[in-house]
Length: 127
Image 1 (cartoon, one colour):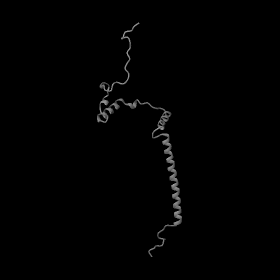
Image 2: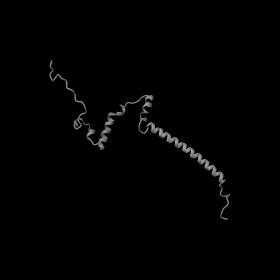
Image 3: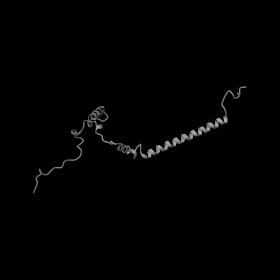
Image 4: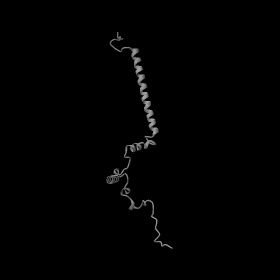
């Protein structure tokens, strides 16, 4: 049985439409991105579509806690960065405590060796 060309289903073309075809371009794509007009159009589109109402994410406390750990692999809050930050904080605290102890010792020695520092009781060298 031979089928005619009309009976053979045609494949649909896949892929994105051609960029140079103005039919498929959004108005934002025809405007320079650093222009004031582009910013106004984008703001209007965002207000119209309200993407914040369609966002999905964790709803439970358990899910939120799990998602909050997502950035610990890389970036500013990576585990190694957190470890180094904690280490620096511990060293700073330890150093401050040591300096405080040394200052107290120095002040105690200074007050023990010099005695009372009352200028009225000390002899003057003007005589």
